[in-house]
Length: 160
Length: 289
Ligand SMILES: Nc1nc2c(ncn2[C@@H]2O[C@H](COP(=O)(O)OP(=O)(O)OP(=O)(O)O)[C@@H](O)[C@H]2O)c(=O)[nH]1
Ligand SMILES: [Mg+2]
Image (cartoon, rainbow over all chains, first blue to last red):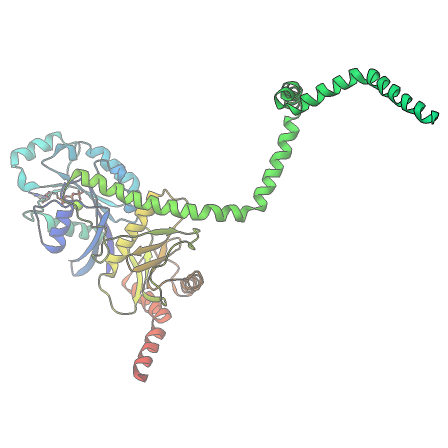
């Protein structure tokens, strides 16, 4: 089975660990336990009959992406940049953040994810869409599970 | 008799004469003696002369003098290099340990500040990660080894440097989630090496409570050997040699494309080289009992 390294990054509290836990254990908690350092876990997904093992690196959120040790990104096949739809501070630097990530990660696939979809309504989404510097790839909710499977399966598909 | 008397008289005369002739000198002599005996007086007389001399030296000698001293110091340093290195290393080791501890403290503090609810996820098999790290080149003599006993290799991982993906793995007994452990090891390694802004120094040992993980770095991958018991310098050398031999003889040259087949093959070879014999021995032991 082939393995791929996938990084979850973004500001603190945006829901990286929640997406990770929802995808791997199908569990969600309202409690906020901040990540220290990094946690690695894996899950295998099957795409068109082919199994692929995703090694997910859930790293501690930093307001500024430069603070994340660059070596964490080495050898990653994909980087998932998560922002929180309810906190503009987590996406108002998004263009600079993505440019930075592209610069250090070589040819890794970069996915922009807006999380906590359950906390905002369609009007909010329209408003955010107008102000945000770049389009997102997918909107998720770790709480309801909306689009979580799609996010990771979509990635796995791109690896094959 | 006369002669004696005369001579006595003569003696007295001579004495007087001497006193008269030498009076000035004696006074001078006494003055000199006082001067020498009184440091204050002496210094007031001598200092100006010395100062003058120093000024002269300052103006005329520095270049030649400096060169000579520099050479001397240089030679001394070269000669006593080992001594100096030995003096510095234990201090370095201490500094590194302190640094790692303080790095983690800082990390924890900054997060504690942000939230009350802190969970350590920098963990290994659920054990809280209390580890010390030792870099290559650092003398280990003053590291206290708490657990004594023969070294037992529990598990050997071959891990891709950048991605932390498993190239191969073999162990004494079957374990689960080896690729997750490989990822965590790589993360910790990256974190510590990054924190030190290391140049060529690689992390060599990670310790968690009772187990140790010895690391041996190659360009594109590294070995992580999990051990119990304490590893002496000699045993470490021997283990390194065995791993290097394995790398040379049994690892495919291009480690960059890990496939299911390459993983299986390398893992089997690893098992054969490091565990098959040990397992057989152990079985024999059990049978003979
Ligand atoms: N309602 C809602 N809450 C969420 C969602 N995702 C995460 N949360 C909550 O947001 C808080 C932070 O979530 P985490 O997953 O710990 O955030 P993180 O990005 O891992 O944070 P750091 O580890 O500090 O970087 C927690 O209280 C979660 O319960 C979501 O989709 N909806
Ligand atoms: Mg987290």
